[in-house]
Image 1 (tube, rainbow, N blue to C red):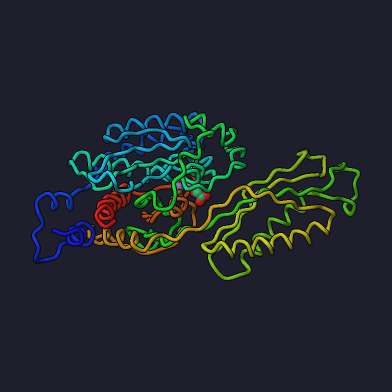
Image 2: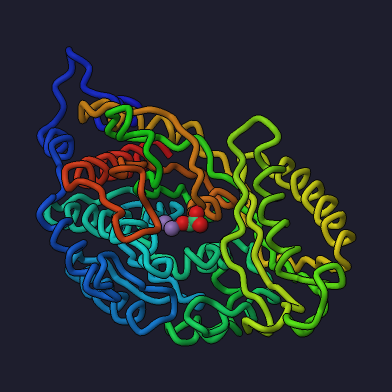
Length: 435
Ligand code: GLV
Ligand code: MN
Ligand code: MN
């Protein structure tokens, strides 16, 4: 049997006239354990659990560290050989039959946003381990070496995956993360070593491909009653810290027409960002997600405000155009009350299209499993966009109930999670043959 024939059986269904050998039929029937997926997700949800539901398991917190220890155990049980790389990523390796082939990667992340949910990242991480465990239990040996990856600090800005794709800059290591630790300190906390980050970098062509299963985080699949989303591309994301400088003065004695109120300018800025982003057609989004006034007292006119600005779109050039317009409008706001706007770029995730061959593999896998699917963009950032810099990338989405994510009420149904994991499993097998 040649490879194309094999592939059509694994990914695209069985040609009517051909009877495949028993070992191949066994692979076509492989399914993950939905019960084990649920048990692992339930166990992960204990780390950083919040009383209102969901978790606050921000990267480099004790909860993050403790959950990662459990992930290492699960990887060992799945007969993977796990280790922590110099960037703090967990990589579980499994040998392939053809050791000269580049590794085939799949995984996700287990860090969360503050007050996040139990599914973002967790689903793709436990599913990746589950796929490996299913292979181990059924003695499936792939051609390619496999690497199941749990990336560190996805939520802060894809720090682990961008270290591997070579996009992480030295300056970013000083960024203070949500845990209070800098990226540098956080990487050391997880067992990495920033002095050796060069060694984790991989060049284009160093991986066979990368797959990631993830919850949609929007409501498209649920609303359309569609089982599987095939990601066509992941948005580019740019974030800045914006400092508005005015003049702090007495809130009782300074007349209203003599104030250089940084908070007032910042309020106008928030409204203006929304207006500018909505002023052109498209799916672009813009957000001011954090804001702090200084000195921060009821009886002092704020002399300084520090806030964030985030812009996202599939087209990085459009982000730049919007940013230019926002800066010009902010200058006008500042001129009105004698305040000044300054911008410090926090980080950039460049947009990434998925690979057409990976999309086809995922679509075929869904079809064979009799799951409905549609091609769709991802408005959320993912480690997959860093991996797209170094190899073919494919992403699988499953429905998020109510389109809620980055919130305690984030939920995906166990059946959808098992469906997604089975699509991942078949996609890995198909790519293993096709590449
Ligand atoms: C990650 O979840 C992001 O889209 O910010
Ligand atoms: Mn995520
Ligand atoms: Mn997220």
